Length: 498
Ligand SMILES: [Zn+2]
Image 1: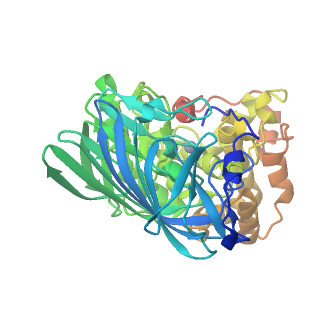
Image 2: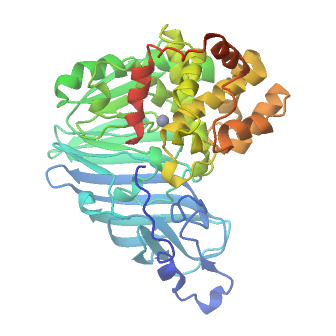
Image 3: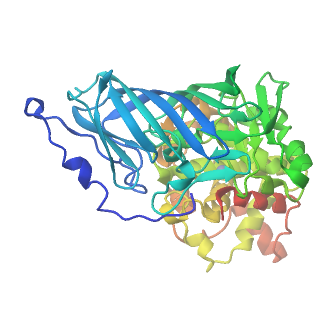
């Protein structure tokens, strides 16, 4: 999520050179990308995955991962071959039970050519056997596999799957998951959803995790290490599973004092966003040296550093808000990142107001006044920031400011109806910034084209934050004071590795 290094043009050639059987005229290779202009080779064309079954074994001492991925999919075009995104070493591929040819291609493509071509609209079962040492693999010169002293973690955005399972790696193709991981006794394997069972045998323990609701590949996480796992149920009835590395040192207390409030905060957010969309909630804090947190579905990833200055409920609110805005309702393309980050940041503003540490109005005024018109902050367009600025501060702060401007424009009744209605309107699906504007217009009965253009799509500082603060600023001619919550909100900017 922090490095945008692309070498366009050279990646796709290999998959185009495969011979197509004479009997399969009209059948063509699936595209090596799903069609996202920010990331041309992320995801793939020609099929849609419904389920991933990952059966893995991991050795923490040597970082060796081996496994079998069984992928249930359906073709969306006549295919002579199809791609998955993957970096580890594949030993066998089967398509509907028959061995298939396969080859690595480009930066992270695995090209699979079945014995017989696949007709459009048919179900297909892919079995991929593989092994490898993830920490030795890179694409575009980077790795997002995080080694720890006692294991490893897969959590990053927009890419983390390539290092541990083959996938159609784009949020447009969400699927359900069973993640089963065997690790040496005394080590835990943490993943998304619900722990269905654990089985111990001959010195190994297998953890069986299930995500029964659609989940994007980048929100699928794996953590292996020595963890203390806590379980409970929120007052509102949401099961909670949290996990803390046994090796958090001085950050241990503050991490628990923050993440143990997950149930309370899920219930509080439900008041704004509607019922919690998944069967469990929680977070985990591994002993990584990273700085960010990530909204991995149902099981949020927190770097220990997020708690270096004491407890931080603001970051927990941010990541839990994503469970509605980003996870249940996922973006259609990476340009739609404002729907994730603007709303997660705005949830932090609501929490600040709830805690008496600054109202959303005060935070909006402060952001507006903090950046003079010639600040590069205003050149980032939250509605289409480009891949280099996808996680720029402006996507968060200008993004939340845009939401305050929307609230001022349509009034509190319509605004909070939109806030709660949107996750229901697109539950478990995908939606774009345009879809959001259309929805807000429908609920409010107002045309919002100009407002969205001003706040999300112009590379310049809007004339005034809103009518209200402009008036108050003119009266006082003094910049607004820094809200008490500001530092804890800003601390979550490490969320995306700045
Ligand atoms: Zn976020």
